[in-house]
Amino acid sequence: MSDKLNEALFEARPYVEYYEKLENLVKRLWTEAATEENFLRLLNEEIERAEEPFRTDLRIFLQKFEAL
Image (cartoon, rainbow, N blue to C red; front, side, top):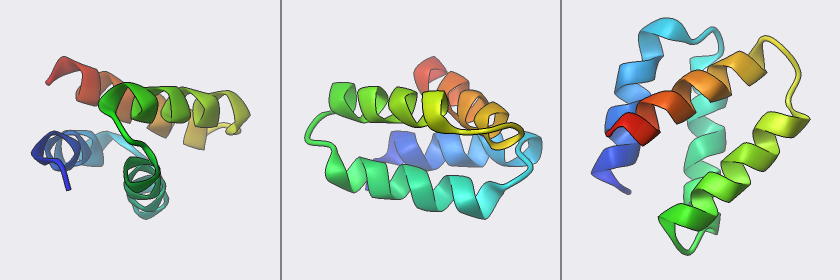
């Protein structure tokens, strides 16, 4: 697994409400994605489908991931 993914999860943890759900989802998406670009596309699709407050958790993770 990517160090970037783990670091983004670590950075997001204090700010998200459903950390375990977030962790499971992003790890599954990471294994499905062939590239980081594909991972981001899959993540954005999940953000569009998600309902609050989990959508906010996904956005926080995305912000941390893109900042690395």
